[in-house]
Image (cartoon, rainbow, N blue to C red; front, side, top):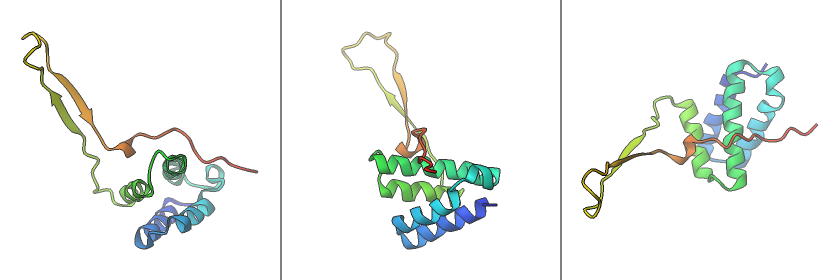
Length: 120
């Protein structure tokens, strides 16, 4: 049975050496058929990594984004900080027009909802 610790070990090797191709090979070996031979925590983390790998392959994320993302999986102290941004009204607008509040966040927070295809 594949455990979350095995996946984290593959991530730590990637963080130590920076070889994305080697990471994909190591991770693929662990994540293959994980929904039948992995514990629930391993399945969850594998789904998140597969989603980010799909984003990298599709060109929506870079290898640096992948590196940053997987580092948050093994280091729970890396915070995902949201920044509030307030846009004030221009002087030409009426006084009773309210200010708009928006939120900016890192791009890697959103997932594409895709995963790597399983080929039998």
